Amino acid sequence: MMRVKTYVAPSPIAGLGLFAGEDIKKGTETWRYLPLVDSKLDPSDFEKLDPLSQEFIKKYCGLSKTTGKYIIYGDDTRFCNHSKNANVAISTVKFDDEYNSIAIRDIKKGEELTIDYQTIDQNDANNKNPQLYSK
Image: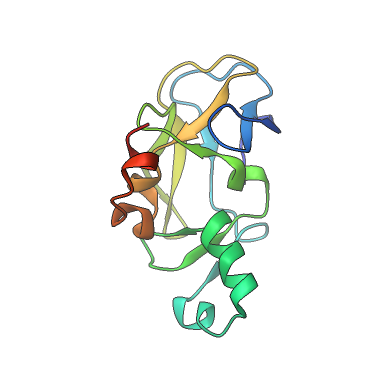
């Protein structure tokens, strides 16, 4: 669940993006897994889904490097785009077997929040797509 004010808007990176609705100081927690809002999907259950549902999960959910389960975000976190020069990163604090994320520098209101997908998503960590991961 997002821990800071955000909004979704067109992104210069890709489609829609997640933008800061307030100034965010470096070190501020930006997201935390909250079981009452977010959920987890076991990969064996993913295989039982129809192709359209699988496509959605692959696009908007992350395969946790911590638990090996898909994280189904209950908020707009799914619109956080990838960047090698991200302004948000996972922290060293674990909540419910998942790490939270923090701002790794000051982020101005209206700035897009980004994270390096390869640091949080098991599928992306193995992806060698130079078009996505060179940004």
